[in-house]
Image (cartoon, rainbow, N blue to C red):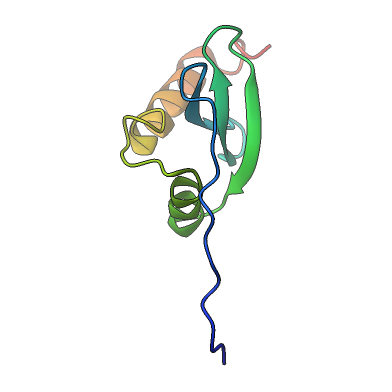
Length: 94
């Protein structure tokens, strides 16, 4: 039984040069939340997303308000990746 609630500290990120994204694996569907540099395209991975609670925690941790800020709709991303994998039959993977 906890008497005190854990304090959530909002962390900062460079909003001008980075945007929050969710990177999903085509093979196993594993998802990682992080930040993509808009100039180089390099992704800095921050945390593994196992469920909706993890995604909500990531968004709360960095003060992200909406889906548009976080790289779009995750269901759309999964749908796109599934179709891409089916159409290329794995041949497009580098």
